[in-house]
Length: 200
Length: 200
DNA sequence: GTCTATAGCGGGATAGAC
DNA sequence: GTCTATCCCGCTATAGAC
Image (cartoon, rainbow over all chains, first blue to last red; front, side, top):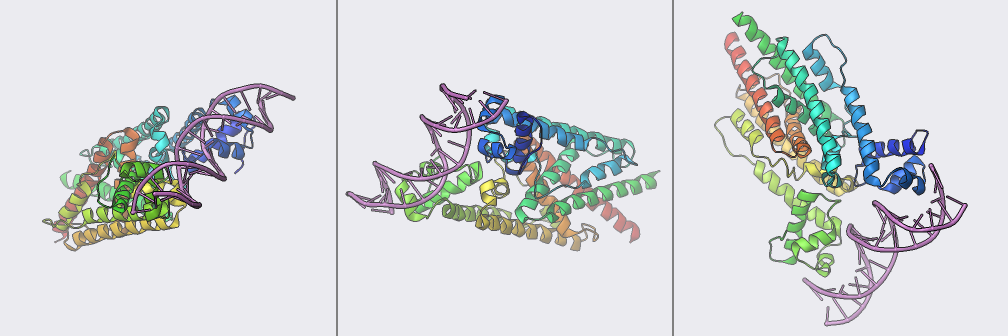
């Protein structure tokens, strides 16, 4: 589990970022990070005051990467874009870099890490809300929808998909969960279309 | 955090069951359990070979309790029963006794615990599938639905709701997620009803 | 900037007395 | 069945040399 980067500092951050994702915060020891980064203990405590400070830097990097991934690929229609985001490949067995943090006891005890996670979720939620509102404005989805509520339902499906995939040790449950949701969105859009035509 | 029960063994299992729920497996030490159960170290290692064995007994109890809760309250219609289960009160901040286990590194390393979790998820999934199929049979939901897929979407919404609630430190996201899903089910049922009538 | 040595603490379990 | 003493280990960090 070697990690790239030039300076010791970069190597440490990159290694921690990966380990946070794969093993979580509590389960990752300074030793693990040093080994992965191929960096000695002296360097570690020279560049960072301790595990917490390194985790902040690494989590920040993980969050940035994730939000970048969600940044818009333009699509034919708002609904298509929404579905494209929903159906984007998700490594069910690896888990979510951010959502994972919420189940880590040591993260819950750490206000700084916790608030970073919360902010990240707020950001993605806003992203969903924008897509939903755009779809409503384009008459692809009914006006009656509560976009904040639906945004949370969508986020929950993704986060829950990760939980199921880990429980079953398989990618399939994640795929089923998101496809089930996509089908429901399609039905919603179609019936709205039909209703719109009949009253037009 | 005292725990009820008569024999030391019972007290230990009850305490562990609660701690598994609240703190998880990795984060719960034998010391914690003994303190909560008000039982000495001698008793602990007399009744159980170690932490693992106690966890198996405690997790088994937690799973039984959860499955009992899901056991049927009879309702007016299959769809109503389905929604009633979906909207049942869920303590978002406390988390799911079972789903929580899937994010615990020490649980993932423990094949016995992991398979218990997997079995529990299979059981609840089957329960959802039955309710969905019943609703389809009663013509409340369209035949085109893939009941296994939808069951997983529903389970994911619940599990994801817990993740969101912990991230935000609030019950609200969980409630939003399930209500968003309930609304979609209603829309699905309604449009199916309409479509059914128009082609009748 | 990086190294090695050391330290305090808690996790998890064993030993043997009572 | 329950008690206390003890053990080994890894986590996290500090100290001081190079």
